[in-house]
Length: 227
Length: 263
Image (cartoon, rainbow over all chains, first blue to last red; front, side, top):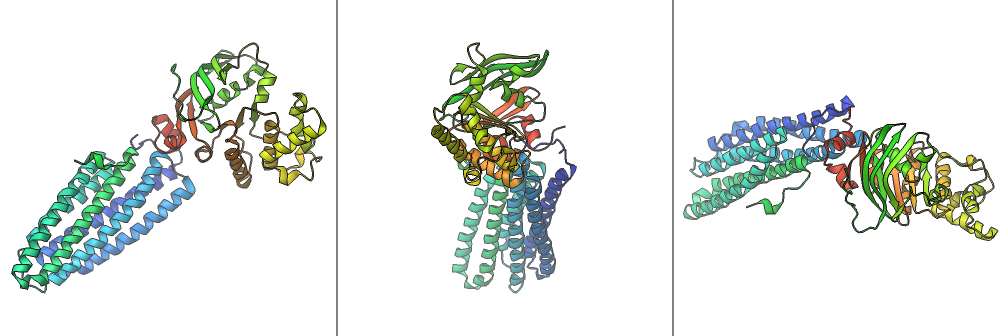
């Protein structure tokens, strides 16, 4: 059964659930921007975004604490059931994933600073492409969350294979490049970390897709649905 | 709903089977064609808003509607395959095998001992005083009250606390060897500690009895029962394993009710 749109008898209860959803939406918006800025910074080898990304990360962390408080309160005061129960528990999981995404985006931004010390390398194009896919995944799964729509969530879940594939290809190519030209080892290591962080963000997007699916349908997204 | 509703606890034998049970009070229909299979040795919770028919249906199970003027009961209702509305069934005997616990504890104005001994005495279950003593002690043990009252069996039942009185009433029901125990909001007049004791007791009793509980507390229904039936406006809307009802109900009405969205 899909999420109910009927209002609660106790208005405050409905409001508390709405606030929980709002917190998640704000967290999602923040980490999405964080990630976009971090990837752009890597491409530009720009160290200047660090303070901005750090400030956003603090906001994301504060929101995660807020979500945890709200969830605790809902369990203690309202004992949510059925769709409300699934929404509350999913919110807790999603907030954890979003906080991790924010953390990884921050790491990526820091690597941009490290890369600024090197001459431009063509390898960043690969990371840019991988980043574009991961940003798309994150955006889609956040849309799925806000609209409580299963279909885009399932799509994101399936697209994780593509991220993994691209990541593996990138690592192979990087190794080859670095073997051929040892001067690339310095920037290459930073780029590898960026790629690894992006791949992890893809995993978190997948987790969020699973949480959205459970929230809406009450059943887990299982492996046999995967082609 | 004419088809029998699937028994959610497949491995347990059916104790109570209802087919198209209808009840009307002075021509006003209170229950519409309820069909349900209730398994033995488990707890089945009836939930639903006030006036939904859950207590009306509960009262059918020990023919308490017989005592209400203008009440008409239709359909088939069997316990162990025996039709309980059959002319040959003596309601007094039926009520010994289908015990009932009410919202407010209602001990007789008698001693603790006599409250429990009353049923066995009128049904002639004990031939001697030692035998009766044993029945009383056993029932009080099963109701989890023995340790608290063994030294004051001659005290009036009404001298006990609310929670103890409710367990005394349960002991009184158990003393006549019931098959089914009906509980109509047994904890709504009790504090949380007494409620926890009764819930613990219900969990122990289900090993030996078919227990049916009407409750307005969703959390209580979720905690104590294995099956849950949701009634609304005289209809049985949804019946299934308790876990399914509270995490993923099939019917919008069930969902709206348990999540507090009912108008």
